[in-house]
Amino acid sequence: MSKMASVTAAKVSSERVRALYSAYVLGNYADAPFALVKGEGSTVWDAENRRYLDFTSGIAVNTLGHCHPRWVERLSTQLKRLGHVSNLFHTPQQAELAKALSERAGPGKLFFCNSGAEANEFLIKLGRLHGLRKCGEEGRCHRIITAKNAFHGRTFGGMAATPQSKIQQGFGPMLEGFRHAQFNDASSFAEQIDESVCAILVETIQGEGGIHPAEADFLRELRVLCDAHGLLLILDEVQCGIGRTGKFFAYEHAGIVPDAIGMAKGLGGGFPIGAAWVAEPHAGLFKPGSHGTTYGGNPLACAASLAVLEVMEEEGLLERVSAKGPDWIASLKELATKHPEHLSGARGMGYHSALVVRGDPAHWIERLRENGLLTVRAGQDAIRLMPALNVTDQELQTALEIIDFVFGTN
Ligand code: PLP
Image 1 (cartoon, rainbow, N blue to C red):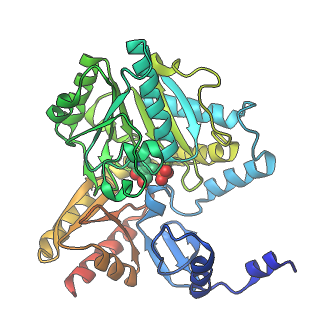
Image 2 (cartoon, protein in one colour; image 1 turned 120 degrees about the horizontal axis):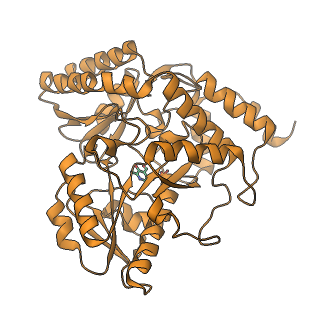
C-alpha cells in the first residue's frame, strides 16, 4: 500500500483529522470542532457518528441538501462521460446552463467561473469596460460604489469592494477605484456619484454582514440613479440568490432588473461554480481573449447546476420556500420575543435568515451545535440559519425546538 493510500485507509476520527489539519492545512480558517464524513438531506454525521441538523448548508451552498439522488446521478453520469475540456471547446452542459439562467434573469449572456469572488472580479471588469465605453478613455470612469458592511470576496477586487478592516487588514494597498456608501440609503450613493463612476455594486441581501436585506425602495432608487447617470447596476447574489428567498433571484422581490448579476454558492448545490449574467446591451463588452478561466463552465459543474435547477423546478422548491419562509421567519421572531435576555430579534427572507443575539454569537453557536444544530455566524451579532431549500417541516420544527431549548437553559 502506498503511503498516501495508507493515510486514506487509516481509521478516521475527528481527533486524527484535526491533528493532520494542524500539521498540514494552512491556518487561515478557525479550528473546527469535528470532521464531517457523511451527509443525507439536511443531516450530516461526524467521524464519531454523531448526527447534526445542518442549517449552514455549507454556507448557503447545498440547495438540495446533501447527496440529493438526482444531483449525485447527474454528476456521476457526467463524470463517467466527460470531466473537463476547457473553453477551447463547447460543451452541451455549459450551453444548456447558460440558456436556463438567461431564461431566469432575462435577455443576456452568461460567463462561468468557479467561485463568488471570481464572479465579482469579472463584474468589476465589466464595470470598467462600461466606463471605457462611456468616457472613451481608460481610467477616467472606472470607479465603483459599493455599500458599507458589504462582503464581495477575498480577491483584490473583492477586498477593495468590501470596506471592512477585518477583511482588508494586512493586505494593503487596496485596489484603487472604489467608493463606499450607506446600505439602504440611496441618497448616500447619490452623493458618491460623479463622472469618474461607472457602476454600483451591492448585495441584494448582505449575507456575511449579518443578513440585512436591501429594501425594495432602495433597490428601485438605485435603478433610477444608475439610469440617470449611465451607470451599471450590478447585484451580488452569490449568497442570497438561487431560490434562497423564495424567488430565483432575491432582487425579483423588488421588481427591478439589474444590468448584471453575480452568482455562485447555491448554483452548484455543492459542486464549485460561479457565474455572472450580463444584460444584453452590455454583453458585447467582452471580446474573445478579454477574460477567461480554465475551469469556467466545466461540464461537471454545469451538470451539477442543471440538476439543481431541474430538482428546484420538479420539487417546487421556490413555491415551497415562498410558502414556508414567512412562517419560518415569524417563528424565529417569536423565539426572540420569548428569550429577550439573549435575543434581540430575527432578520431575513425565506430561508436566508438569522437570529440576532445580544453579545457574541460564538457561545450560542457552540451550544446549538452541542444540541445537534449547525449554524454559522454573520457580522457582529447574527447567527445565520440557511437550511436546504428542501428541508422538511419536521426538520424546521426540530431546529426551532433546539433553539428554544438552548436559549431557554442558559
Ligand atoms: N459575494 C458574497 C455576497 C458572498 O457572500 C461571498 C462569500 O461568502 C462571496 C461574494 C465570495 O464567494 P466565494 O467564497 O465563493 O469566493
